[in-house]
Length: 145
Image (cartoon, rainbow, N blue to C red; front, top):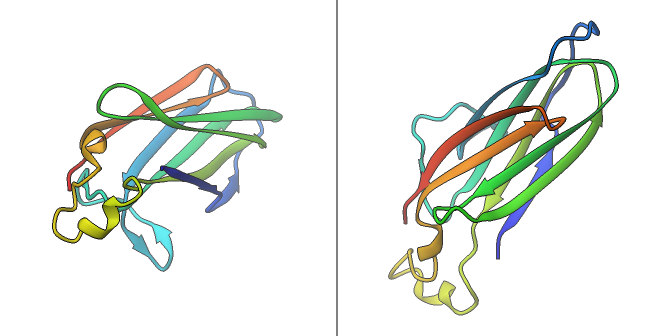
């Protein structure tokens, strides 16, 4: 079972001037400092990591917006999706996360083999982030056990 969470770390308002489209910058990390995700040293994560995507959206016109975040596994299948609706102008920082869980019964034996039951999660992943169906950004990372 996968668990995906969403929370807003920091909201900041910018110019309310309408721009041609929103810009998306993001990083993927499993490192927390003082309870907040920080920029990563690498892009390889363990099966037991809680993997955060920290997404900065800028250039938002005043009004309602929608952020879609798709977590694409090594087979190309969308494993999780977050849809976050918000009302903002300027910019916002949104953090979502993914936590991989082995199937029932595999956790007892995972001390001997952390990859047990996690085979379909091991390999390259992609995160697709789209704002208002027009601006899209991609980030890649890898899961190894």
